[in-house]
Image (tube, rainbow, N blue to C red; front, side, top):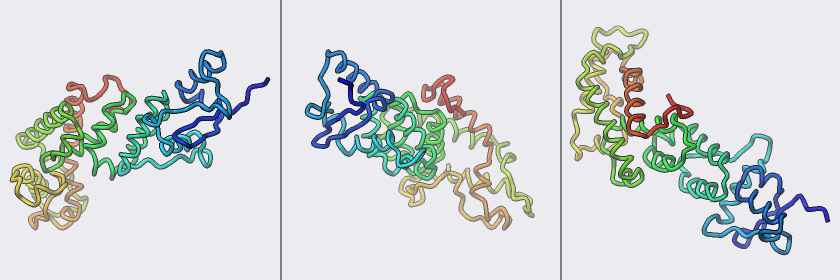
Length: 282
């Protein structure tokens, strides 16, 4: 009798009718299960006797989300992956590990990088999550690191929990190194760009002073210190010309950009946060 091209998968109380070749192409778990069933060494799979997935590994909702990638609504139209829904994607990523769906896991993780606002807002949670997976591109780790390193306030208790002890220690070590360089490397102020219409004489120095003050004023009881602002978010300064003042935060971020990026990458690589020769490295 000719084998059906379909395979029935039961998750919790939901039955999924899927193509055997699609399952086998994207999941080592299903590939092995189907091969064993065909050879007679494993559970026979039929309408009456579907393959059961343990609910503690994958819920019906999670498996349905996985299927939305295997069966997109249109060519190339996949579910949107947002960092603000990290809890939901964490469950999906865990399921892909059990099911041996490496390419799907790699795709989901890579999409986090597109959510720039989400990466900045939830850098600790995201970094703590993606550090578990070797498929994570170094470029995503660097984006998370930049948000945490240039964060004005100290890491919160919840962020430390999300990162874990080892990663927290690595992040703090790089933060300390970068801030020492900013404070002690006086020539850095000369690398700050000015507005192309700048009509001031010392705008670069005043911008650098603003960054320095953000690092220096480290009172944990100060309301500003508790906010999620960056050390490059500078208060308005009337000594800075109107043109530079209007874009002062953006200009501040140009300070020693090349040097600081290189140092962050060097430290992250040396501490083991990045992969030597890994994809997406900066």
